[in-house]
Length: 210
Image (cartoon, rainbow, N blue to C red; front, side, top):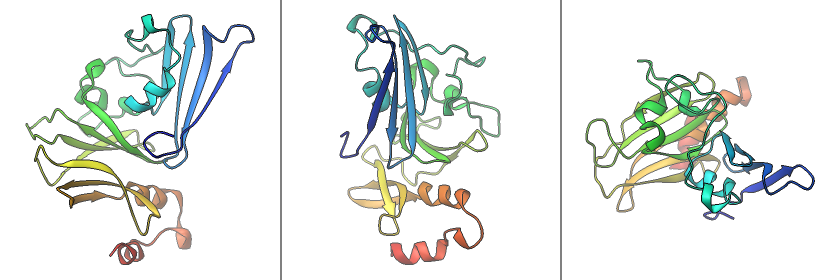
């Protein structure tokens, strides 16, 4: 149980060699997030959507002396981004999330994730906004774009919320309990998932959310 959410953690290892050679898989049912961690006698590889919280759980069994070592990927793009992750996604200008987030010294945090979309907050704004810059990465197009947060207040908060009586995951930005912006990434994801009559209606969602 992490932050009130149920996370499922499993591991596979070679018989008699579980201490130095294993694979861990983490699944977050509420967000459909899958992340993994491979460890082999000091060699590490993180894959999937592993944010700070996920990485901490997955690396919990790593010996103390190697905890500070950087996580290395077997094959990385030219800018050093971990392969097969959202950090390789690029915007219309060709800049990857890895680049705008500061690379190894990342200033970004994954706020919420669905099958098709991942919400990311960069605490180091490119324009000097005290709150930070907000991005949404799209898995199907391997791209990302920046969205207006509606505030630059250092007192603003960002957190996971929901719309339509808890039916869809959202990312909420607010100040002192007042909602400023809401990004319904769960609804967006379900629109990608279904078509025709099964596709969720935005007008009905708004009615339920009022």
